[in-house]
Every structure is written in C-alpha cells, then in structure tokens.
Amino acid sequence: MTTNNAFRGLFKPLRESELERIHTATLWVLENVGVRFTNRYVQEHWRQAGHALDEAGLVRLSPHVVEDAIRCTPRRYTRQGKSRALDVHMGDGGLYIGVGSLPLYVVEWKGSGYERRDATRADMVRFGRLGDACANLAIGNGQVKPKDVPDRVVHAIWNQNAVKNIAKPTCCWYALDEGVAADTLAILRAAAGGDEELRRQRTWAITICPDQALSWGDSAVGLVEMAKAGVPLEIMPMPFPGSMTPATLAGSIVQFNAEILAALVLAQAINPGTPINYCIFGGIMDMRSAAHSLGAPELGLLAAGAAQLSRWYGIPNNLVTGISDSKVPDAQAAYEKALTTVLPCLAGADSTSLIGGELDFGLSASYEQLVIDDEIAGQILRLVRGFEVNEETLALDVIREVGPGGHYLDSRHTRKHFREELWLPRLADRRPWDVWQADGAKDAVMRARERVEDLLAAHQPVPLAPERAAAVDGVVRDICEREGVDYDAVAV
Image (cartoon, rainbow, N blue to C red; front, side):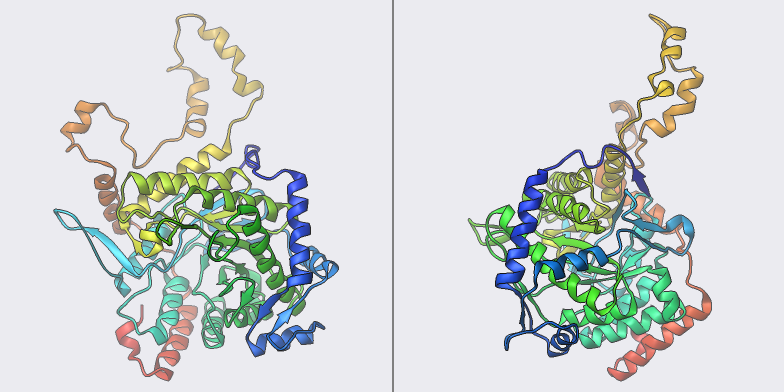
C-alpha cells in the first residue's frame, strides 16, 4: 500500500540553508579527509575509474566528481512485484513502508510469560509469508536469520525464500563479501529469468553497509558486482552519535552523507544509471551504559534529516526506523516504533522499513508485533495522506441541507466519502467496554496473536513461475553441494 499527498514534506528539521551547509561540509570531508576502501578488488575498480588511492585504500573526491555522480543517479525507478498491483515506484512522491530483516531470536508468549528462542528456518518462511500478507507493508523481507541453517549457506537459503515465497519487492541478504555477492546474483538471475530481466524488473535490492567510520570493507565488493548487474543498491551507513559518528546530529549527517556519496560515486562510475536508495540504519549510544539504543527519538530526527537531504539531491531513499529497545510487544515498543517512523514519513521519505516485528535492539522478532506494526503503518499512511480542500469536501450544500439540529448518517455525501476519508483499523478495538469485556477483554497483543493465525491460514503468496523456481532451486542446490551441506535438509 502506498500514499501520495501534499502533507508529506511538512516536517522539515533542516532549512534550505542548512541543507546547503551539510552538502558543502560533506564535499569538504570527501575532498580533504577521504573515505577508505580496504578491499583490493574494489580498489582496482576505483583506479579503473581514474581515481588515485593511497596505500591504505583512501580515496579523495573532488566536488565536481561527486555532483556529477549525483546527477547520474536515477531520480525515480520502479521495483516490480509479482503482480503490477505490488509494484513500488521509488521517487514518484509516494510512501512505501516495508519489513525489516535478520533478528536472531523469536519472542513468544508461553502462557505465563514471554520466552526468547533461536529463530528457525520455519520462522523465516512464516515471517516472510506474514509480512507478505500485511496490507500496509509494501516491501517484503525474509525477516529472521535461521539458526538451524549452517552459516556458510544461510544467505542462499534466505534468498531462496525471498524470491520464491514473497510476492512484494524484497530486500535480499546483505552483500557481505565476494562469495555472498556472487551466490546472490546467481539466485537473482535465475529468479528473474536472466540478466536483462533482472535489470528490467529491479524487484530485489541489495543492502551494503560501511564497516567503520568513513571506511568500506568487503561489502563494497557487493556494491561493485550489483552495480555491474544493474541491481538496486541500498547504501546504508549505521550512524550512532557518540560512538560511530559525531555526538552532534548535524555532524553525524555529514559523516553518513559522505559514506553514501562515496559509494554512490563508485557505483555510477561502474555502471552509470545504477538505481540507488539513500539509506540509514542508526540509533544512539546511551552514555550511561554504553548500550546502543535503536528506539531513541534521535533516530527519527536523523531519518527525517536523511529524507530531506536525499530529496534535495533527487535520490530515492529507504530509511530504517521503527525498531524498539523493548524486549516484548508492549507500550514502549508501540511508541518507539510509531514516533521514529512518522517523522521521516512526514519529512518526505520514499520508503521506510518499519522493521516489522523487531524488538530488543533488532535482535528479536515477534509475530504479534509484526501485525501491530502493520497497524501502525496503516495509521501513518493515513496521517501523511492528509485531506483535500475543494468544493466537494467543503460540503456546503450538505451542511445547508442538513441544517441546525440534523445529522449526516443517512447523507449520500457520507456514504460517498467515509470509506476513503476515515481510516478503519483491522486490529484496534473501538467497541464499548461491555462488548469488549464480553468478548474476552483481549488486549492488543492478544488480538494480534489471533490475527497472525488468521493471516497465515488465509494468505498464499503469488508463486514464482515454475521454471524459474526450479532454476533457483538448482542454483541453491549447487551452493549447498559446494559447501558440503545437505540441500534437502535446509531448502525451502
């Protein structure tokens, strides 16, 4: 589900002059401090593009090189779903909210309290299907990292599930190194039906992250390979003011902007016109304990600043928000997720990952929380849609017809407009106390638990074409055989 409206962009933490100052400061960092690329294969691609690096892999970029690369980056592009109704049009002014990925654990209610256990392959499939069923979440994901799949093939099994069992445009496994990047590309080519179709469909995006401040490691190999193939790249620094970035939010924005733009320059040098998503996934360091917080309000501010800045550049964005530090589905989880997500949405985000279902600093996932997050996403989509003011919506003729002391329940105008104007929840309870109590006095988490089972029972994702599914299975089987893993024991 998407929304397109005039309300978006009303929250502007940065003035125009401040956007210009951040851009100028970023250019200074790129030209005078530089960004390091430690992988030799990546360094060679910098040299092929005409850039000098020092022995440590540091590259410095002149302002005109950076700005030329920004101009070369597509302002909009479409990511195809398995049906046209599921297409995501990045940069078209709409808002798309998606699901996050890679918690290690699942939090479940066990009668008298919550328990946390390792995520499994079955959880990966169920979470992927549940996110696919959530009407307000437009971008899918495999969600959890299964503990019962060997690490050396988990990327292949995760991607197999993503391309076969999720109908929405989806983020694939992080391109961590050359081997993972090559395996992922082989799976995506099989799923798309070849190189040209992969480049045309742009269904699957690959996330790459710097490994240190102003420093890219082996994940930049994934950038190189995916750029060559024309696969959309999610360039995603992880700013943590006070630890990985300066303690000031403005300084943090300058640094992550430099990290993104350096990677963008390389991608456009390799393949001009490579689709880029401007991304961040951040939080703060709580100086009382040195713990990282992902539910802090500053994440919403950083993401809102990133939304503004990326729109100023004309680069589509996908901003990771909606994580909670709470360990279980509760009030803390709800307010942290809602507040950190609504700010960038109002500031003009193209897409944001509400991190559906994620809790505990992103380490755990909850089925109930995922459908609660879908409800939060629905409310946010309604908020940012705003409302229209025109002759029809001002309703002067209706007001005159009803007059003082009347009501609008039987008005044709009401029947015409209430469904589109008034948001109707799927999970929230709006019934009187007596009715709610007679029905079991269920709180939001209890209702979410029931909705999880209803959605999983009813939803069947649009399947991948049989010949492509078979091709994907063949690629994954080869990867498992290469790594000495029994394919039949881990495949989906």
